[in-house]
Image (cartoon, rainbow, N blue to C red; front, side, top):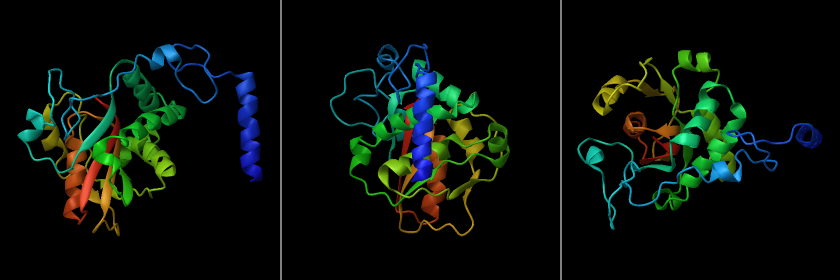
Length: 242
């Protein structure tokens, strides 16, 4: 309790000396906020219609649930991958600063976006046994200094009281996925993950966590490993959909 009290006093002192500012434009914001109202208004929420499997938004008119052509023509191992926001503009910039420029404090904002995904009907009524972050290869994690998915999963665990466990391990260093199409990404990731030694997911409902969903290939491969090891179901949640 004493340590917590000191921490609170320190944070209060820091707030007085260094008022909170918007992470994008630098305007002053309320304590505990990361974006001003103007920048907050620019982030794009994913709303129906969207693919029930991968959350890809659909620009046309659609009144019923549907699965996009990309998901319909390939094997997907997760039940659904849910993202609350489009990974463009301010959302993309915040996640980039968090991941690549070591702005670790932005994990709280990104985790807030991730929590929003849990209100989606595809996740809201699920009773998950464990939260599992998508792992980085050890070499890449040493280079970055942290695994962004693990930081987000830990914060989500605190919010939901669902235990968080790093049950997966990345065993093959893969080339960057950025320039690859969907089929190339799937080939690039094949057999890149395995269950950690002594990890047991038999009979569990798993919530898989990552920062951004692009094609879903990484999440699908992780889900394949978890289900092969006995997981009953694997749903995924990310902060943003590219």
